[in-house]
Length: 127
Image (cartoon, rainbow, N blue to C red; front, side, top):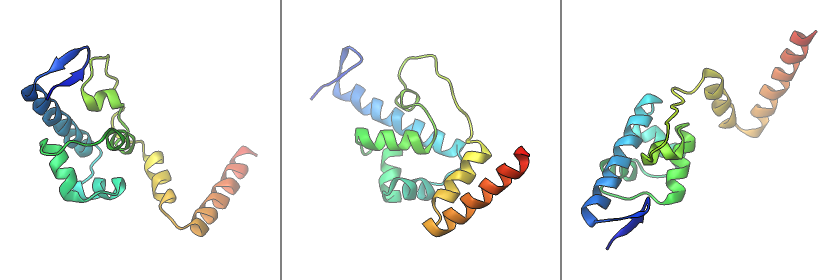
């Protein structure tokens, strides 16, 4: 079985290497964000063991999973896939984005309290 990729046909060996490299990049970007496998797996709604298989290239993530991984890790999908382009690494997630993510994980009622509080703070600082 051969896979069409980047205007060329991959051999089975190249395909295996391709997925191993994706797995290495997933692990690399996960570590840059200071996530454990368990934490990232929870954010992706998958088991930690599945993520470990992705990172070692023993299992191939679906396209939708790769998109989710890139979004959670704040990396371009092209970078995750190792595609040729002038890569612009975003680096660690800004502290504000981390706080927003924490707020998103709160129950709706508590999100509203935080939102109302922030609105008041913003209003006070505008004056």
